[in-house]
Image (cartoon, rainbow, N blue to C red; front, side, top):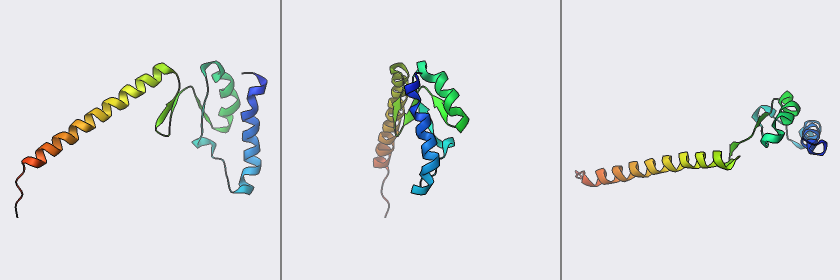
Length: 103
């Protein structure tokens, strides 16, 4: 990782100092830093001391950040889940139409 890429560490230090006066208290144990494989070891040495998890891929608000191969695996898993859920709902609907309505 080049020296000019370490801005994140400086930025995080500033957030720790000035954040609380603006109502923001950083919680590093809830943070995930996603970086490339090339920068991973340097990022870990800089950010793990704060308790920030450093990874090369991660789910992000329903999406995925990482290598194309891992993203494809993740998408396959999601598609399989939704396919099974759709089939289950179709079976439930079909079975509910067969049930007589008693009044």
